[in-house]
Image (cartoon, rainbow, N blue to C red; front, side, top):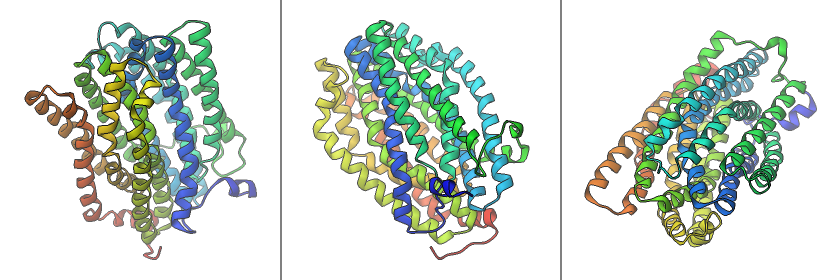
Length: 460
């Protein structure tokens, strides 16, 4: 590996654990912040320059988008785990095959999701009980978004490849640039061209295609072991099987949970347009709140995958423990500020008093429990890193879908208050964290490390 490559990639099988996790997580955190700007800027622009209905239309589509996008993100996790394991084991040949297999799979899966998302848009909106006044706007936004989903998928896959080998900086640079492009295009398409929600949708997908182009350009120009060459662009059936084995459970989990959230949105929509817009604003804010936790969790997957490839069992245990503590501290530091600033934050999206009242209520209730999610997210990421993707899938589907839907169904039969309905998310987090913590301690995941590396070391 060249000197330039060493400076960009990060070997997480050695060095101080907390320092390695923080240094790898920081670019991920900044990148995730800029990625959230895509949807947040869309919401702010339409909420202030179009209407409250336009804000509700853009924000309520999040669950529908995540239903299909979440499936791909799970599959990309499978690719990232396999690539990080090959990188940690210093297996150049298998590393290259895994990279090219992942990109070929991304292209064909992107075509399928584009067609499925476009066709399923009316059904998804009906399931969410989308108000008739908002339906045309939401349909327009969703269908344009799905037409450009290939760009989002290729950006996430190329970034996942770079992160798997320890490079979390260049994906950050791409996001900074394209987020700024998205802001400019939002303002031009909405204010100058008066395209409304269609304008912010086009701005988003054009920016995502730019991100995908930059990611592919880096891989094509690279001289490192993970570089991409067109003549090698084919799928290895055995590696594709490994990626699917790890990624399919994670993808199904993400898709099913997101689809379940479509029903949660339906419960919220019953309280009116202002409630729907307030819930949408809460969703955008909570997405930022959870970014430190999600960034640490992404780092844990790479950290665990590399150390599983190297057989560093003790190092994995220490990394999981320290990651949980780090993510809880960071999450509640943000939640404290968010709790007191809630009304002002919601007013950035829309100035309607009812929207602000609902949005502030949702933020304050849910931010009290955000840190609880650290246990389930970190444990799930560590399990995926060693190759166990099925158990986290089953636990999360039970907690976030089965239990949450039973909770919402029962609670709406005994009260007309929106407060217990909005606590459906935290209820699922608590159940999931308890089950996941017990499973992590009792499952014998250590045997998977032995299976990946052929040997294990207890010293961290």
